[in-house]
View 1 (cartoon, rainbow, N blue to C red):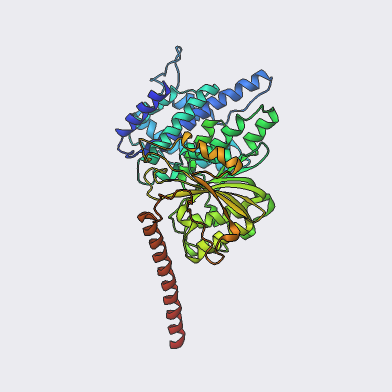
View 2 (tube, one colour):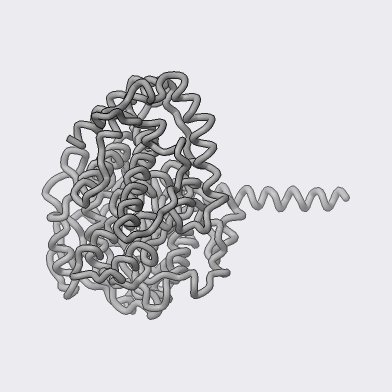
Amino acid sequence: MFEQTFKNIDDTLRKDAGCSSELDYVEQTSWILFLKYLDDFEQERQDRAELSGQSCAPILKPEFQWKAWAAPKDWAGKIDHRAALSGDDLKEFVDHQLFPYLKQFKAEAEGPDTIQYKIGEIFSEIKNKIQSGHTLREVIERVDELKFRSHAEKHEMSCLYEDKIKNMGNAGRNGGEYYTPRPLIKTIIKVVRPKIGETVYDGAAGSAGFLCEAFEYLRHHGELSSADLETLQKRTFFGREKKSLAYVIGIMNMILHGVEAPSIAHVNTLQENIRDLQEKDRFNVVLANPPFGGKERAEVQQNFPIKSGETAFLFLQHFIAVLKAGGRAGIVIKNTFLSNTDNASVSLRRKLLEDCCLHTVLDLPGGVFTGAGVKTVVLFFEKGRPTEKIWYYQLNLDRKLGKTRPLSEDDLAEFVELEQSKADSENSWTVDVAAVDKAAFDLSVKNPNRKDEAALREPQEILEEMRQLDEEAAEILAKIGGLLENGQEQCHV
């Protein structure tokens, strides 16, 4: 039933002039879903309070509660269309009364870890794009069919929402940056193995896939006490996300997975100077797929010892710095990072090897990330001791990955099994860091067990590295030009 409801919502939104893509469908569904969730959450709070003989003040004023404006019911439990707003009246109420009211919660909340703060943050970052009040009425009534009460209902809802995020990632434009294939995330978590009581962090949270799957992993590993469950809810998962849409989707995704007040901050992680980090700012586990191919301004690069315009390189420095001693990480990054010859890449590889034990590199085939032409690797490392040996695993499949043949957990089963012992096989081998060239620190994937494999790099990799080198050369020339111009001005003076 839920699946058909989601499909009907998308079909309705397609007819509205304000929604033109899968990204819009997910965004608009998200804020309406959130308010329906909030209504069920409020009812649960009231029920628990009554059972314990306590009183419970509602979060929202009566006139802004779901049952008042969105879905007032008649004596038979059906929506009372005489009392329910619709058309221009509904749009006017949502745009000019509801949203402004919900925005103010951010300033009035006791702290960022409260549901009140999340309400204010979400409605400060999102707006109603549905232009027709009649369309909005239809979507609201579809959403009202959904229930968030039982664990089974929440699980089904979370799976359907994940499907929507996946479709958004496959839709082109910028959707792909929000979605990391869940089989890959689950595999990374199996290798990093977070534990109850450890803190888990993603500084490029996107749709919060890593945090959601880490929550599922910990929730289903062994018997948990009530104290353990409270720890998972309040003191385990932390994230940051720069983009408004991704932030809202990430919050909603974690809520649907069962985290009531997700600790995701809407900030640009890279604007924090890593030299200012204190022990209280650090985490036990980092799981992330930072955006690559982006460019950061010069003032942002000043926050890092190794200057680079490449976003992923700045994130990697941040992740190393934000780990506690003995902390563990699983990070997705372009495979060209292992072999690029520019100064930033070489310096960063050296830092990674000297400050951390890079114990495992998982080499992924092209097509893992639908719509992205680049190949990636996953770096698994532990902070606090230098690297001595690196175990490589190259995922070689008998099919080409794509939308209709995506990556599965079964594809990665051998990797998970062999990683425990770091055993050599046709697809895995070990490199002694003592034998690595100390000038270039080249860590590129070169499988010695596959003699039939061509040693040539893929054209896309070569073109990507050439593009990066061209951009760096342009930056250097611009700086030189600026210095020369300044020098000429001083001479004129």
